[in-house]
Amino acid sequence: MEKSYAPRMHSAEHILNQAMVRKFDCGRCFSAHVNKKKSKCDYHFDRSLTDDEAKVVETEVNKAISANLDVTEEMVSLEGAAGDFNLTRLPDGVETVRIVRIGDYDSCPCIGEHVDNTAEIGVFRIISHDFNDGVLRIRYKLDGRE
Image: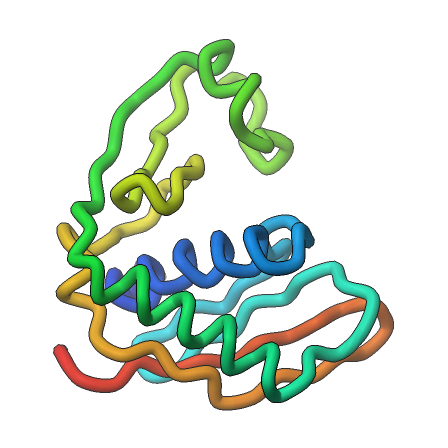
């Protein structure tokens, strides 16, 4: 079965990850389920977010989206990427790594499809968040643009 991609949601996931890293220094999500209608990201965390903190994250993500940042990619050697990125999820035998950059806001290794500019994403909205057994789950949707 062919994988279905949601470039708007996937690009929003990158921005959410960077917002979480900047706000909480928690690292990027270790698990994500990206769908066209709604998505979720799971983070190793030590507590639940307050509703105010979730609103701050949502605002930060929307600020980055509204900055109309170009989304670009480049191929770099495995050695070149090793000092800047967590490469533990790469399969064995990889010699080059695709780095996706969202303006100067975020960059990370990725094989997924993305928008060309954050203006294509729409409005990011956290629809729920919960915490269980060391895992913070954030569920989100995008409004507007299609």
